[in-house]
Image (cartoon, rainbow, N blue to C red):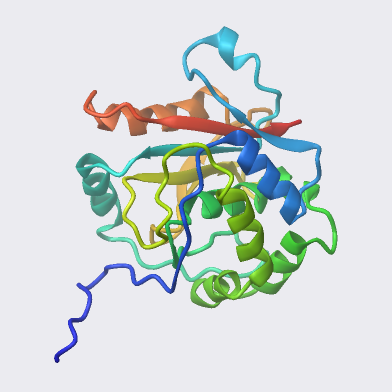
Length: 249
């Protein structure tokens, strides 16, 4: 029987995980198990417009993780943005951000977490010699494909992820190869150039969304405007979004 090759540009996943529920308690549990100090935790962001609700989020916010529907509007926008973009080949500590190419299916929540804690000021909260510290040390100098293999082959990472993912209360698929219709992306502030980056392992690389002021964090007007752009693209068709902030515990 002839084998059918995947379409050009399609993602061929090497491993499959069950999806991670969008739950700040589970996200926090996972980062602490991996080696992030208890000084940081994920928090739900219940509004991106109400100053009173935003005031409940401890500051500074070091990263945002957005969960959103993988709609036709989103896929069209991504294709347009990436039409002339080459695959990112950056490596080393001279890059403005640490980016992981996603090669594990249904693990976009994990990639969102790794992007959140591996960049900006959050890096300073990683406990030395922890699983996360070892993972980053092993992958920092590698180009994206080799860096992806470090994640694929990490038994510590897989065990920690699975233990947390199985605790979710929502109706997520238990089949790691099942298709899901939501996706996670992370936004961080680079400590190298002060720009906001959109980090999504399903893209061709990190996306520079422009600068913010040195004294501003991801809940600044500029940071929230980037989130609002995702929502506006849906034009009211699908408002199934949620947002979490990585902030002081």
